[in-house]
Every structure is written in structure tokens, then in C-alpha cells.
Length: 311
Image 1 (tube, helix red, strand yellow):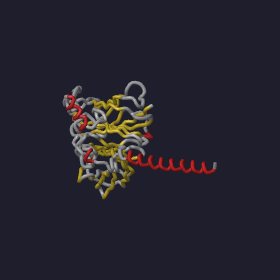
Image 2: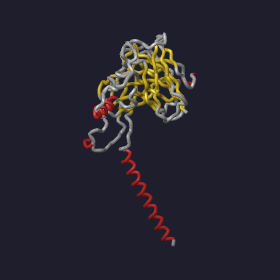
Image 3: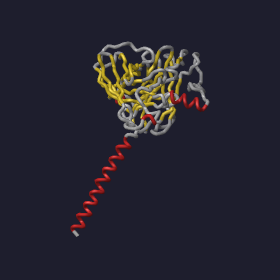
Image 4: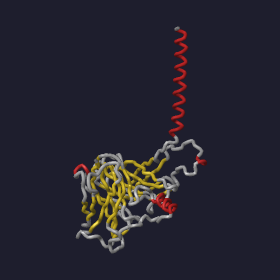
């Protein structure tokens, strides 16, 4: 009986050992196929910000020639005229936001001359789009000491607001530095997580009237970023949703639709463009959010900051 027990024990242990070895081999092989976002690091030298992209090993060891659409770091295409859209948010208050556009130096390396950024720890969200239309948001953090920099120009924009913890759970009006106002028109009833909601905003001048010189901001009526205050969610939204314009235009071309996403707009200002915009989005989980909304009139890019609580 003891001999039989020893033999059975040896057999069971051998089965467990080989089973564990098989499981680990299969898991390691499978993990190479699981999507891993590109990684990004950020360093500064004076007022020069350098962002470096790195492939973390997605599809590592596979026959990449057999996968023509495999992601690389040198297959990026412009989205709204830029290869990268960078949101810099000061934590933990989310009281300062910058929307900037670093320039590509060579494959996987972007650089940007910083504007005058107040000191603090910033969470960086960088949006890029691959030639297939597949978008990615790369995330890292950077502590900035605060120093003079260049003036904002072109499509770059920024805003300051009280920290979210010092603001009411829901704010629907934001007064801009030039006296203009941006308003959020909240939906009727409670804002609930995991429900598609048309987030509607409008821009008015100091007299409460629609500006007569409304302009497109990077080809759209507006851009928005929704950020959960605990840092667990970030989304860069357009009036067409979260889809990249490269993917949107491909889909529109295949369906025979317009490629500019501007069909059906209510042209209500003298410039021919409306002073309101709607972003379709569903907040992913209950909690506090901040929305940073950008609209343009003339050559001025306005950034409104709004607090949202999802039940």
C-alpha cells in the first residue's frame, strides 16, 4: 500500500508539474497577442519637452510580415492636422489644462517648446492615430518646476479653474478671460454613468449673444476632454464621438457619406457656423468628472471647464 501511495504521489506531482509548465507556456504565448498600449516617457531640458514612445512587446516574436497592419511607432497619420494631441492636466486639482501639439522629430520622438506652465505635477495624455485608423492614448506624468516659456499660438490652448474639490458637483457656466461665456446645457434628469448622453455646449459673448465670428477649431465645431477626477478615465471627444478622423473618414468613404462630419449642422451665426456643439459620450463609471471644452471664434480658442457628477 505504501509503495502504491508513493507511486501515485509521484504520478500526481509529475502531472501537476507538467500541467503548470504547459499552462505557463500557453499563457506567455497568449500574452503576446493581448493588446498593450504604447508606452511614453517625458523629460524636460529647460523649456523643451521631449516625449519618447516605446513598443512594450505587443505581438512580440510573431511573424510581423504576415500581419501587415501590425502597429509600429513610425506609422502615425495626422488627426485634425496634428500627429499628436497632448493634454496636460495639473493634479490633483485638475485646475490647469493645456491642449498642445508636439512635433515629430524622428520615429517615436516628439518635441515641444513649452509655454509658461505653472509649477506642479502634470498628468500627460497624448493622442495619436496609426495609419490603419487605430487611435491610442499614451499616458505619463511629469513634474514641472514652473518657468517662463513661449506664448500660446495656433491651435494650442489652456485654461485655469478652481480645483475640482473646491467646486460644486455640477457646474454649467464658465466665464472666460475675455468676458465670453461657455455654457453646458445639461440633459433633463440625472446624469447617469454608462448611458449615452449628448453633452451640449454653447459659446456666447459678454452680451449673451452668439458670436458673429464663430470658427472651426481644427476642422470641428469643438473638441472636448472628459477626465474622471481620480484619474481612472480620460477621453478626447469630437462631435463625431471618440472615433479618430482617419477612421471616421474611411468609414464615411466606404458608406458613400460626407467625410467632413459637418452634415446637418444648424448654421445660426453670421459666420455660417453655430455657436453650439454636441459631444456624444457615455461616462464609464459613477463619480466626479471634469470636462474641458474648446470652441473658437475668430482666432481665439476658448476653453471652458465644467464639473459633472455621474450617478
